[in-house]
Length: 257
Length: 274
Image (cartoon, rainbow over all chains, first blue to last red):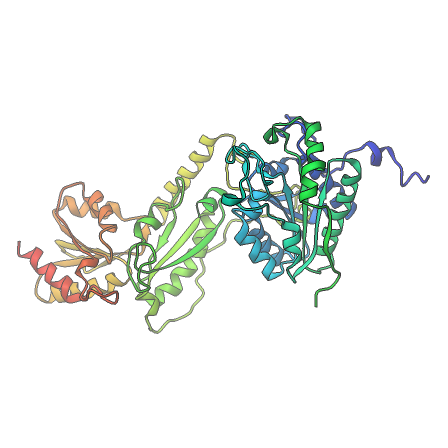
């Protein structure tokens, strides 16, 4: 094997854009945010876009990614990253402009900014972490909570009569004409991790090729709020989340007429 | 806007006041004074508030607004109303030179585009991500900024103030109305004058206080139930009378009603004859 492909750095190293957490690690045991941070760091480095990236991180556990990624960053009002990304991308069209948000931030409080960005076909990349609860605030029911899922605001389990059904973001977003790419991934095992890494790279590539809006939904474990061990959380994703939220690409086009 | 005040993000917001509260009518009023001059959003901050009363001022104060927003990295509100917004007057459009504004080194544009190659982070909490070492440090900085704006950016017009013992206070369209009433009063020998706010914030507390100590009476003319009058009452420290012509004194009960000069003039005469 060529030394250029298999190096110690590549196999056991750290992406340079990932900041060593020497002052203490903020995320819960088994949380998937850091995995997703690593994916973003690796992909941006491979594409050589670290110096041209601007990440807009929503309120929630995503906001702490600003301490993990050494790129220009913005943190503003809850749900508003698509609005801020719109402005920034229009001012700096050559930059890689992307948002990192939770399912609550994008689909609940951020539904209006999301709809605007989709309708206007902004050439940004939206990354949504789906953990089926409002995580940072202690595990309340969210738009993506499963039917019957017990949360702090649905202690008897999500009841469809009062609270409807989980929102399928990747499928819904794929229906918009201005969307170039809409996909759902997960990082609960190495195979899913590698596939999702590929999805994120494709999404960023769509932006670089100026095709349209790209969207990546990533199912993300939240053991603290699911009241499970990290290991059980991985199983719960396989057994409960993925059947409800299937993985794969829902839209992938290279040109929008 | 509260977010932008914390993030120290320069911005200009134009508010052409309409009647309220809630949905309200779509026509003029001056009911956003308190909201605009006391911050108005969540948390403790202040906006500079510029109040044009003519088409020329709409043009000139708009330029000033952008300069002040950049100078202080703070929201600036241009507070108009639907009467001023519909004025048709001759305007001389001239670029005003204010001098240099601070460099926007704090803005995001991609790490590679910064001279020092370090990343920038624009955020709105202040101390959570270390922009300030503590919450108190953030508040001290905001407080200092408020004091600086108060000391340096006060603007108002003295109209017929020589020897005035009854002082009207107004801004926007009611200031134009008040000028007419002051002219009529002076023609009859009544020593009326007008302090016209150009900045609604900072507010001219000092000159009002000084005049109160000299024994002048005050008449506030505003198209609301009484908002700016509270600042005048605060300034006079209980030393003198503060009268009010309010939205309830409009000439018509429908939403097209206005405060007109004859009403203000009658009130001036009434106060003078007491």
